[in-house]
Image 1 (tube, one colour):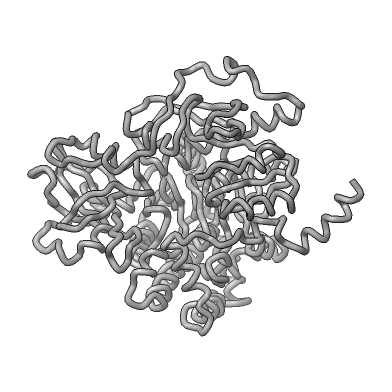
Image 2: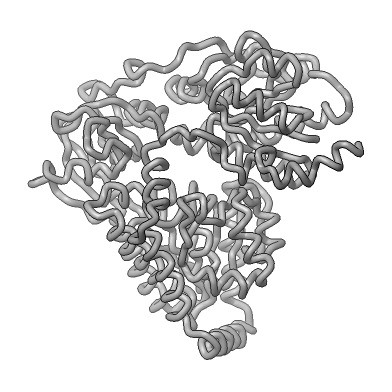
Length: 572
C-alpha cells in the first residue's frame, strides 16, 4: 500500500511504524502537519491509499478524510478522548491502559475503531511508557488494522476490538491538575505528577524563588528534612524532600532564563547550592548515571544518561569507569547503556547553553572520541554493546566500536548526522563502518537519513545480532550469552586474533589519522563560515517548528523520485 504518515513531529512512534511498515513492503512517506494547504498538496502529490497519523495534535481537514481513509493512533483505551490521555492515566494511577486506532471523522477521537491493544502500566514517566508500551501496542494495532484493509474488510465489531473498561472524554491536563504541594504530597504523589509531564511540558513549580518546569524525577534514598527543602545535589540533580522521603529532580526548564530550554537542574541553580551537601553522582544514594556489575567473567557497565545525551563530563566519567572495568579479572565487557536510550551522541542542550557553543562542541566530540578509541583498542577483553534502547547519530557509531553489537528487536536506530546541519560526524565511523558493513553499505547507512530497525541493522553489518522477546528479558539474554563467551575455551584465540587484526589495521592506517581527518571536518562544522550546524542545533534545542518537511522523509516532495515514479504510475 501507499501510506502517508501525517505527523506533528517524526517522533519515536512514527519512526518505529515507518520501520515496520517499510519492512513489510509498504511504500511509506511522511508529511509534517504544518497547515491544511501543505497537507493537501502532499496528499495530491503522493496519492496514498491510506493516511496514518501516529502522532498528530490537530484534526485532519475534512477535505482530506472525506476522500482518503485516515487512521488515527490514539494513546488511550477505546472511549478515551482528549489530548492528554497518557497524562491522565499516570495521574489517576491507572493499572491498565491501551492504544486505539480509529478512523478520522468530523468529531475527534470518535470515528470507527479498527483495532486496539492494552498493556499494564508501570510506575514510569510518560516518555518511557510512550517509547515502550504505547509504541508496542500501537505497532500491533496498526498492523492489525492494515491486515483488515488488505483483506478488504471494514472495522470489526466493537465486541471484538476491546473487552476491557471504556474510557471517557477528558479535557487537557492543566498545570493546576498536577501542581505539587510539597507540604502534603508524599513521594509517590510527587513522582506521579512529574512523570505525567515528562518530557513535556514539565510540572510548573518554584525553586529558589524561580518559576521552573520540573522533569526527570527519581526516588531518592536516605534523604529527609522539612518537606520542600533542597537537601542535596548529585551530578545534574537536586534532591527535594517530600512528606515521607525525597526525590531527585534531574532536569528543569526556566522559560525566563536566557537559555529557556531543558537543562540539568544543578546547571540552572549552580549559584544557589552553596552549603547544600553533595552526593557523588554514581554513588548508590546519588542520582546514579553509571553503575558496574560483575558476574562469571563478565563486567557490565550500565550508563543511563537522560535521553541518551552524553556531555563532555559524562563521556569522561564513562571513560574512567571503562578503564576501571578493563583492569578487572574478567573476559568480556558489556556496555549496556540505559533502559530508554543507549546513546544519542553529543549533548546538544549543554552545547547550546555554553558560553562558546563551538568550543563546547569541540570538547564534547573529543571526549566521546576518547571513549570510542578506548573501546576499539581494547585487547584484553571481548567487548559487547548491548542496546536495550535506541541510539542516534554518534551514539550508533560509538556502539559499533565494540566487537559485537547486540540489539533488542523493536529498537530504532538513527545512524546519521546530516540532519543536524550537515554535521560530518566522528567516533571513527569512517573506519568502523567500512570494516563491519563494507563500503557500499557504509555509504547507504550514512546517506539515507531514515530510521533503521534491528533487522536491517544486522543485515547491513551495523550490528551483529538481534534478540527477540519482551523488553525485560533482553538483559537476561545478554548476560547469558556474554557469560557463554567468557567461558568459551576458544576465547584466548579469539582475543589473539582480535589483537592481530587491530595491529594489521593500524599498520595500514593508524586510528589517529581517521580521527584527525574526521575532526578536521568537524572543526569546519563548529568554527567554519557556514553556520548550518549552529542553526540546526538551535532549532532542535528550542523546538522551533519546521517550515517544511525534509525531503529525506517526504519522498513525494523529491522531484527526482517523482519523475522516476511517474512512468510506472502512468503504466499502471
